[in-house]
Image 1 (cartoon, helix red, strand yellow):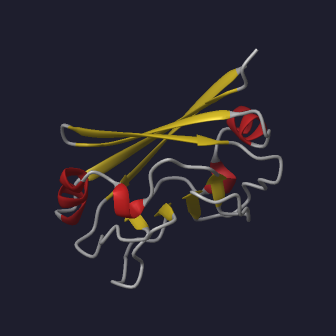
Image 2: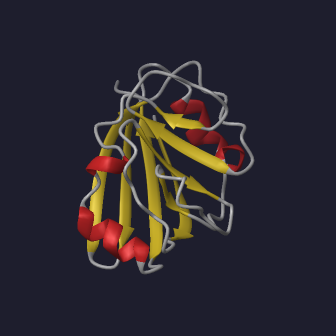
Length: 142
């Protein structure tokens, strides 16, 4: 069982990517310097808009999640897990977490990459306003 979805967003001059436990994309068009976990703005989807098949898999403790973050020639691959506690109902935000905390914005838990550890080449592109493609793929091992 496998599903995927793609989110298109862009960087912003205030992308700092310094948060130690999460990273986030949002449909909001702007970003203040306080949003140190946000790496993409003007996303075309929030958690509630994800493909229903993907949401079903993400909301399973067995789900293995791969997120590809691409801007320009730079790609970062993030590994994470699904959780039965995921609601995936937030209209504007998607948050990937290192911890197991879940709320309506949480897209995956147990992430091996967070804002602070994202490749700084990607962060530099995002600070220039580059387009960011977020590809989410999840599967349940057989």
